[in-house]
Length: 413
Ligand SMILES: Cc1ncc(COP(=O)(O)O)c(C=O)c1O
Image 1 (cartoon, helix red, strand yellow):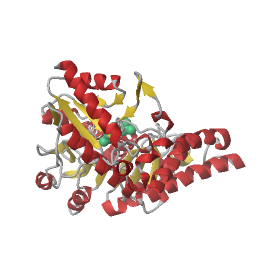
Image 2 (cartoon, rainbow, N blue to C red):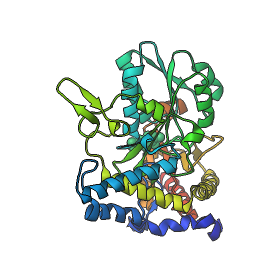
Image 3 (cartoon, rainbow, N blue to C red):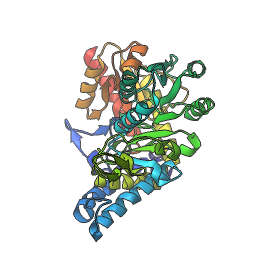
Image 4 (tube, protein in one colour):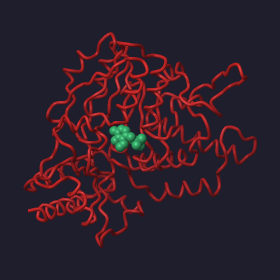
């Protein structure tokens, strides 16, 4: 790739210098960080914002009558407004701060499942779900004698839309679907899935963990009912994430967890719950985390999601072509739309060994089942090597990856 192209429109790749962690060496080699689907690194502004929160703004929120608590509350609510704009939600009350995608889905599966699921009901999800969008629904099914139905994928890793339609029945209560597959990078046609589900009055939850850092997400355009993502996968801190819920549906949900902050009044006989989103934010929230997440989103939005998407698309094409040329490398899946994630296997070398050998070259990738064991079973694999991109990766990272894979093959030849 040309140097100018490798930094992308608007110098996206050049933003690497904003991320201090990347400027390190491991095993004597410069770090090439390609495990962004697991977690992303943080720009200095986000690290500074988190530190500044604890240096200047820290107090408990919503309850204080003093200026410092008001400042913390205002920073927290301003982060909520930032997330609202980021997702184009209709109102700040549709944004619930949670621990991450996992907690967001557990919240819906528990609160919604408890009140809406009956014996014989069905929950529809796909063969490519992360365990986080599968096991909570299994638990909800066990509690209600409902059952899971699964939309299959084709051999390229695309969702089989023609199989989706007949699986939507009078018994389907919710569709829970991943926006971007963390194992294959497949971008699912969420808008179309929502259209078909809504035509039958069925709500849709979207697991957006792997989508939000790589392109624009507009929940009103998608028309989904729930959207979940994790702060740490979008350049924010760990321990904070977001559940978007359409106001009408969120308003009707009972609490997930109970305690301080989620009540209007309590007696020993009965409790009246607070309005949303407070109803779903029991206990002291991760205020600093939410504030720093707001800062991460502002950082990303200032670069521009469209520029990030086109830069990463170019980088992914470059990586796909380069890896495909390495003898013995098989790229897993060839979905119609893919973003930021490439899974592959190397003939004769276990993925874990590939991962370890790459680490010795300074290249950090993930090897394993990626919390998608049913998908691995469908693909006839137990594990893959996964390289996943973020806006700070460059063509030279891809060159280092490819060179390290070539060396890994040589070691096992
Ligand atoms: C598609 C998908 N869903 C859910 C999760 C869970 O995210 P977290 O562990 O941040 O809750 C992940 C994490 O890798 C993911 O990739």
